[in-house]
Image 1 (cartoon, rainbow, N blue to C red):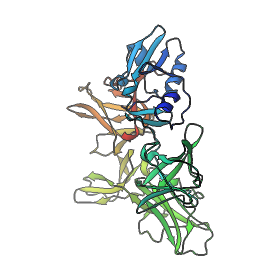
Image 2 (image 1 turned 120 degrees about the horizontal axis):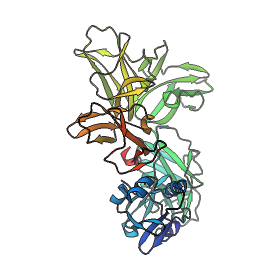
Image 3 (image 1 turned 60 degrees about the vertical axis):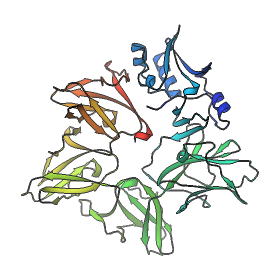
Image 4 (image 1 turned 90 degrees about the vertical axis):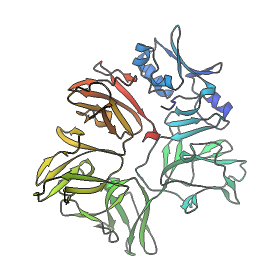
Length: 476
């Protein structure tokens, strides 16, 4: 578990000299400790707001007030002391190493007194909006160029790629401004410039996001795919549209080149269908042989990024047609035709990280996967569920004599749950969960219970509680 707590402005200013954080008075410095006071007379809603504001929203008030426990926070070195009016939660300043949450970002507080921030935002798809070649990626890396500011004494580049370090990436002064080249992986990167201790977004980048502090972070995508359409020199407007942008017909305008049209993009792992729209005419990609019928007689081009999951159905040698359908293709019952093998049927299909419900359709008859013990429910129907790149394992070590155990929560809209598998260690289910807070419960032979192996819980409207789980970006 990572630290989630806000450091007040005065402390950061003294230790770093660079950070521009809001003046937060919830925390106090008492001796060598940073302290949060929580008053028992404070309304519960106000207590929750205070925990949210200071970044300690993962702390369960019920765990605290009922059991006098900090739960997982105690394992990270936080201590609890009873006061005349409530509690004080404290930790030595010298022990503040690791990740500390500040608002919508993560502060990385090191023993050498360097303060950094790391974004929790992950990207699935993106295009750039850079002007004047202010940021360019080539074989040598990604070059950031800040025009002007020749009178500045120091300029630093700070972003998600260097954990928002204020001192790590110093820029080089040139005749027309400042520049630096850094190695970046494909994906989304947020950044700002620090000009003589003043933070500034990139004036030549129109792609930006709210930084949660009344300003903006500039956003740059290191692309990993280029859509290209050869020819069409007389076209006035060419668009690329697909499943990655919900078939938007306006957003992704391609740029004309000497040989046709092109648009560099970043795409997450997965399978994506698309078409080009040239002056209003929808066309498949003539340069891509991979095409698939959408089940309605229309063909779309498609690309695959990442490793393929292989759907397999053993047996059924006399079947004429076997389909796999699921959440990943909007339950299209005509599109994904499986191929017959010596032992049954199979189909490789690339999926990004996630939990996906699916079924097989054998000669028109829908059925769950007999080889998959994990089931789920969607709109009253029982389906098999496949997890791609799981990042968390739910485990219930008790109730080994139970007939069935499932886990349900905010991650699956509190459905009937994902069926867990019985092992010698207990009931388990490996899931993919996005970063953030998740509430959940186990369902043991129809009875809903909180997780006996997790001290973190919070009260719900039924007064029987929910277990609380936090997923950090590293676990994504």
